[in-house]
Amino acid sequence: VWRTGANEATELTLYQDMKVADATVKAGTYSLYTIPGEKEWTVILNNHIHTWGAYEYTDKEDLVRIKVPVRQSPTSIEAFSMAFTPNNNGASLLMGWDDKYVEVPFRKTN
Image (cartoon, rainbow, N blue to C red; front, side, top):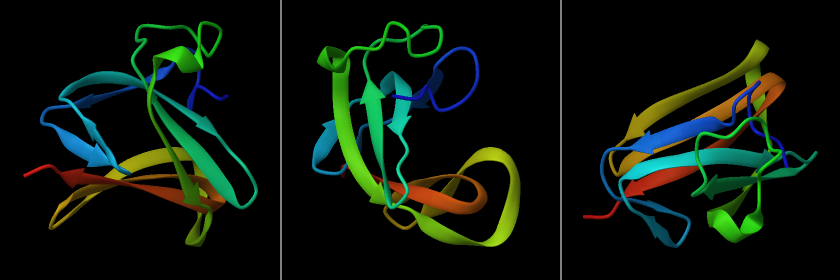
């Protein structure tokens, strides 16, 4: 399990309820962990926040786990980067570096 960044675990704050995979995620703050693989990543939203690295990580606090395919980036990404891209039904979280990235869909619940 990777803290998906450096030092403290990356946290994601949602200001409205969203769907991630088949799970409804209530508005709030969650830690973001990943398990990167060559062909797919497991992306995890975890209830335990304000943690250093992944030392305190436990899957008992996982709210959502979603597997997403690794994609080829059209351009080189110099440093690990994360960005949201809006769409008609929510937004996608893009995470990548070098020539690869993954896309995590967040859909509106209403």
